[in-house]
Length: 250
Image 1 (tube, helix red, strand yellow):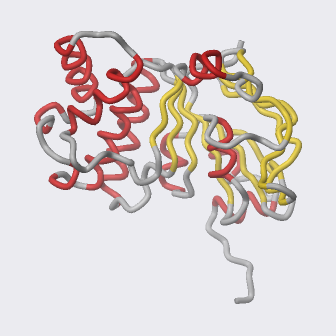
Image 2: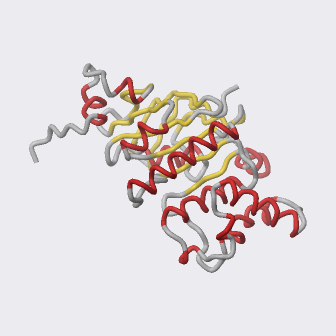
Image 3: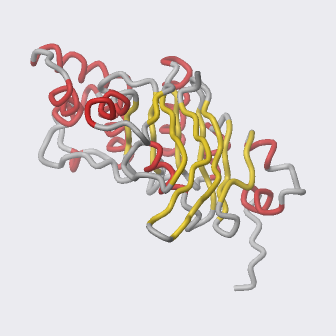
């Protein structure tokens, strides 16, 4: 059983189709990246995968359970199998980092305050933020905010994490540090990552496998190891993307 299996998925809004006939799997412990040009629907696909949007058709299996059909308690149970880090972090500015990480524990568990504090502190420690537990999001850097958002997504110990543009807005050094954190979490804790990003340096550093969406094709035009795709000239769009080749006349 795969952590994630996508079957004949069509993503869009109303009559507007962004991607169709999507079929792919994500392996356990894999860092899987969704990429493509602007407007290809990569963020929309991600939001379908973690249940924020409902696909137009097709199936999304999370740990073998169909998220697209699940309702009520069954849907909540499926969604507890994963955590989500949104593009801007989405931390609550009026709460400390510790309080932010505790939110999901308060909502979904019956743990005591001491137990929640222990778990939250351990999770902050995993991302290197334990010394900053009492700080507000506004008091830490953008890279630290991203780490705190990852910690919050990990609070319930999910085996799958969805990250939306984790490196967006970060300088190269901070971005590299975040890349290494993702690699360490995947390898040491066997967490499966599904990441949307357009940052080539991050893609080459962390991705075990990618799928590339294309706006014109309305689907997947390339998939595999990004280091291999970078060398394959026969897939022109993928080759140009990975090698930063601009063929437009504008």
